[in-house]
Image 1: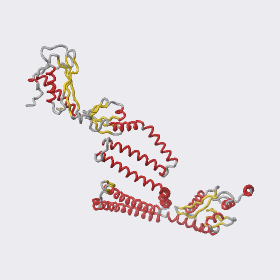
Image 2: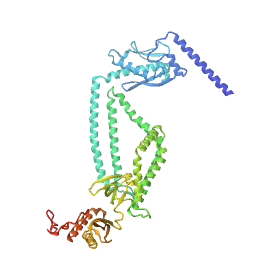
Image 3: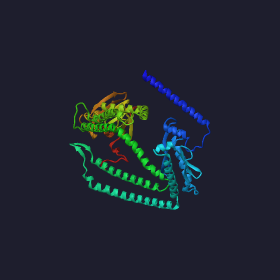
Image 4: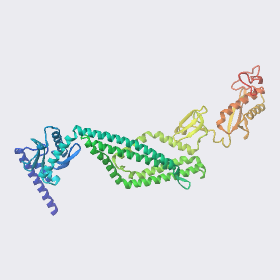
Length: 562
């Protein structure tokens, strides 16, 4: 109860004080106002602001002339410090630009109590109150004298900096600084070129790979790249330093750019200060991310090294095809990276900010909208890999396309047709199509090439089969083991359909072998005077439809003996 009563009493006292202040303000407003300098509010308000019982005081602001800070002034909510400082600076610049004004006209008017007014003849420059003096922790009349001296010096410097002689001298200095900067750039560029050439000649041959037993950790080329990058970074630092020194020394020569020269250091230091503070705050998280990065990187290298050995046959695993090594490595790499991102996400600087979350959501939406077909092709690619549908180099038939598999990617498969055309087929299309692989069994059992002929019933079937087997014997690159064989596939109305089957070891030669086999069949049936009745039959001609040997090489054909 005691604490509650004390709290109520405090509230009542504050309310009474606020009421008294309001009454005083109304009474002051009804009285005739005195002349108040337009660069600051009424004296009583300024004093009350400093005491904390009236309007809340705002931060101070510097009065700047040609980039030089003369002094600082304070403000209140009715007249901000920045606006007051700008008004005072404009008045001082106007006095300096007036040729009829002399420094001796500056004086201090102490006629009003609690207020010191800096006058230039009959014109007011600024007014000082006790609150301004307390800002500098000095007596008001002493502060007024100091401010009066600074204003006089500012006027003299303003005029001196704009005299023709001073401008000409500073322009020559600026021109000389520009010439020196150009010489520094030329000499520095030449020096750095020589340094890079010297290091490349003396050190590059001595840099070797960093490896642990047979495992290569860092390549020599990477080490040389780091050294070369360090040299380039050093040159960039030298260039930036020279440019900064040049700008800071040249801009300060002229009154119009002197303020910019003073801001150069702030332009550089403010971002660096912000980055530095943010970096210091993020050091623990960055250390964790660095450890996680290197751990994940070398884990991926070890996994890659393991699967490379499986692919090369150094490591043999039962029921695991060496062709699965790289696709499996890619899957494991994706899982490890995803796990690393999940672990690292809370430690990424700014990951908890709304902007970061918004960008993450936006990227996720874009990825989900545009990746449906991509994900389908990826899944189809891995499905084909583990199903052993085909591999690079196989001759396959996919839908209406027939050719040799050039490359198998996760998204598409490249097929080279016998016409030397490169066809890119999406893996999702392959997964939904019939695939005929001519090469898988051809490596062990051979691929059977077959063709059919129709021969009349008047020709003995033993003769026909013998001629077909002889045609196979005359065709090079057709296998003798397993032996070829003939099948009678149909007894038609007018002819018997024979099918010759022969084995070949290379499916990529199937078109050439078919051509050679057909040529030999035509030659043999012509030699023995047997008419081929395929594809249709209407009646027996007077003469058998055969080509006699003397007409085999009718022009423009040439005999191989010639």
